[in-house]
Amino acid sequence: MTIQQMRRLLRLKQVKQAVGLGTTAIYEQIKKGEFPRPVHIGTRAVAWVSDDIEKWIEERIAASKSNESIIHKSNVTRHARQPALKRQQHNQDIAPATGDMR
Image 1 (spheres, rainbow, N blue to C red):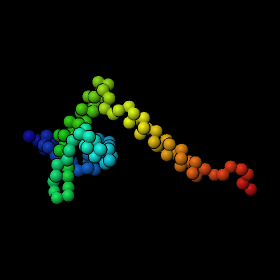
Image 2: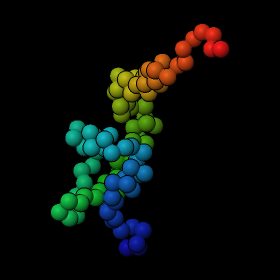
Image 3: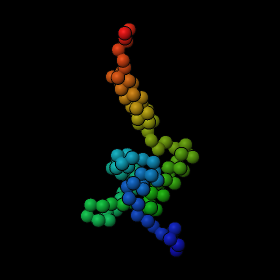
Image 4: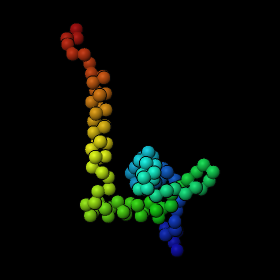
């Protein structure tokens, strides 16, 4: 077995980089049973088994290629709209007063 074939333990930062999700999204998916659970490596430390993360990524790719929905459409719509609404609210909060400014 080569070093590249060995299982590795990945810390949260590495998992986030590998899968493109943030901390909250990862832990929400773990809670729903949709993401691999970490293993304890210390009293207050966890890590993910690299094989589990690679398998999860492969499953996402396969599902995407077979046109299966991984994320419910309503969730995508809700999340896609939130940043636009926040920008709109922010722009309204900082918009200069209209009128002649002499």
